[in-house]
Image (cartoon, rainbow, N blue to C red; front, side):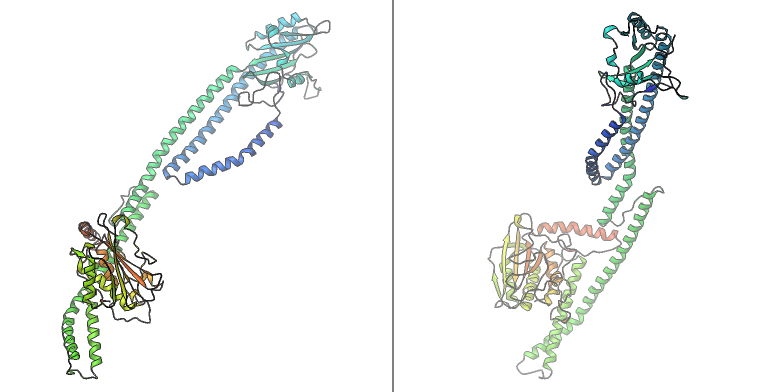
Length: 633
């Protein structure tokens, strides 16, 4: 009996152990696997070929995630972390189990094959016959591992004979990779560390989609060469089942992580949503809004900070409202207190004015200029007090409209005629344009606009009237002037009027349309830096002329009256020169009156909640004003 080739460890693999179960790793029967260098080159090409595509895809996905909701980002990030952990754990578990299964099967098969080679092939004569080889191969194949065996030797006549456990259609030499045959037949040099000339070699291959373990060795001292073929299909099925199980577990873990992330996101974002709702309520003016604080985490600290800020803001607004109310009360009281002495002074000045007009010369010539100055300044002071009282009523929200059906052309004519402006004003208005408005307040608006144009633009002043349907409303510009919606006026003094910043003027009713009145003068226009301040109270276009004949409130009161009707006044410089003031009023203000009633109630409630504050009312949303007398200029 001749011993088989020595087996060191588990034998020697001819080529690196390629995975017979991975995609692209199968080898056809009879061919050797690729070398490690070729594999590394292929992987290197695939890595660099797809790196740019992966980078672009990653940037695209990340850019989409940045613009989605915070909840989705939390869920996606949490899911990616869970997926990475699950895939890593599954991969490691699969790799460890694969190595354990393959190593256990491989050790058992190689050990059995080596034992059979020693016991049965080693018992054959050095030159056996084919029948002996065939019989021995069949006995070896009946071992516990049930592998196919191929024995190769020379018969007594020097011919190469083969003995296969499967007969002529069984395991043949063509099924053995060339690299394995060369390794088995290569004689090794005997050294102190290598005591045998031949060794047991093995290789894993894939044939027809089925993985196999192929091994071969030679008997020491001459004798047959044996090859073994063992199917690893049962192990492959076990590993595939394991892979499916791990994949299902990974999917379940991903679903569970998504649900858990959703729950955590809800827990984290719920306080943030409450904070956003509270901030919106605070922005709407509900300064008593507070958050319920629970816990000691960062979100609880944020809620406490919000409550402190809201409390400080409420206190600050209440203080400012109280000071504003006191200031308005002071102006109102002062105006009322001035009316009594002004009434007496006015009566005296009227007597003095009659004396000036008396032909008998009741006033000395040297005193006459002083008397005229007193009369003029008394009239101006009286107008200023009246305007201050009107502004106070607007600010307090106590003004009301007294509506009536008005012919616009007749109303403009009456305004011009009452002030003796018929020779200085050109009226372009057709009769029959009616509107339901407050005629007294329209008179105040027209008097201020036309008087302002005459004072700063010169005559003739052109006043035109047209109407627009509801579908055409909302333009805010009038006529052919530019800068629609911006406040512009005459020259220096016209810039001394103000618009209520809290106003939100409308441009007409849905069904009645809009009446548009344009007042155009022949002056030089308004400087661009003055345009934003045309309707400011007491604004002076030039600091060198701080004093003027008017009160500086005329255009402001005109704007307030326009807002009271749900309209607006815009100003611009006409392309051909001169300033153009455009008044837009709805033809029917009845609907706004009902809306204002509700707004007044809401305003009063808000004042009570804010500690007695009172805001400046104006525009559609403001309360309606009453009894205004602007500058006749």
